[in-house]
Image 1 (cartoon, rainbow, N blue to C red):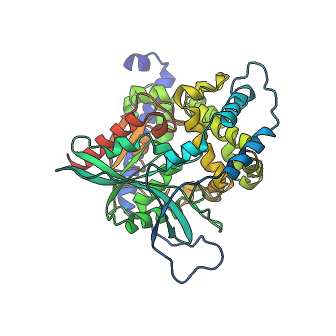
Image 2 (cartoon, one colour):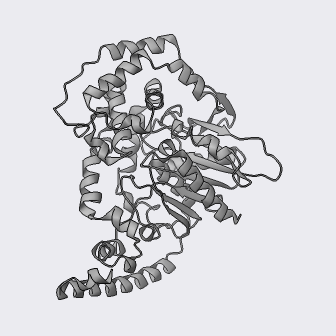
Image 3 (tube, rainbow, N blue to C red):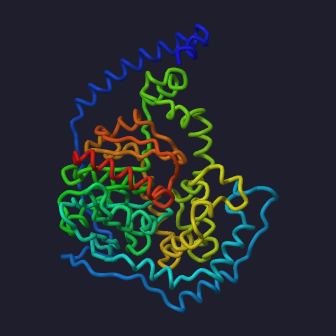
Length: 464
């Protein structure tokens, strides 16, 4: 590191030294401001998202639910698949222009001729599904608990998905979490975000992550849990973070496999100093490797992959019309994310590398959850609701998170957030792990790695 520093010219050295002094002063100022800002939670709020006027009372009953299908549903799917018009891809373009239509033909052929939706429905029903009414909406969730043996400690854990995922993302990690590891096991609750899958979509505007967090807290309370752990990635990371902010006394621990960094003086200075003197800004060598060159890895890369976000955050219903009408279009739109968000270099492959990590049965089952429920439009609206105003001006963005927090940093995640950046908001990080493999869909891609990290984090919190 010092060789790098002394290899710079005098002006560059002075700039770095000045930046380091400014960083120290800024750190002291930030500490003082942090001490002055004593807000440790955000208001729970209230809401009603059902159709029409709010009812005077709400049924709190939890009803069993099962996934169903019919011959008519499958025939309609096949009819729509058969009538799809394919376009020819550009030569040698891989997935750089989106889902390659040459490979799409293979996926669609498998979907039409070999994929067995009835078999997958039976597989989905191997776990216990339920629905209950909260704030005017039927909320779907899975609840899995194993029989307690001996002195085994069973802890409640909620797992929250994102877009374009679903509760099905967690089917591979579920048996790993419910089996005892060193005397600890989990009782797992996996809800569907309202507007996704089998959870009813909101009928009113304004349904953002704060509303979902409140609904999921109500769900855990209704299930009889006064304290519990939460875990999430993508939208699930924001929702579970909001849950921890609303009821820090209930959330014993927060585990995330995606953490968005905040902007500010500390982040800016660390970008200037970090490549040369990483230890001054709390960067490890792995942080430097994942972050820099910063503009290539965290600006241009995000621009290349975030076109969908701008559409869904502005006019989701327009784009959603075609996706809700065409199963092939829906599959291309969703599965392209499972290609690039799993590994960025998959863009250069004609098959997008999809079957290197997933089976077509698993991928198409997730697509079918969107297709059969007609939920793609309502799922896309969630972006609109969360970006109607500047997210950084919301109360949750201005409030720290003080519950014990564990972060699993997967190497192929869309953006890397160093521990030193995460600590700006998450004030009680007990565990930060550089994961050896995996991308955005951690539970789907690397269930064993994620499960092991959740276990080690919870054991630290429980002091086991």
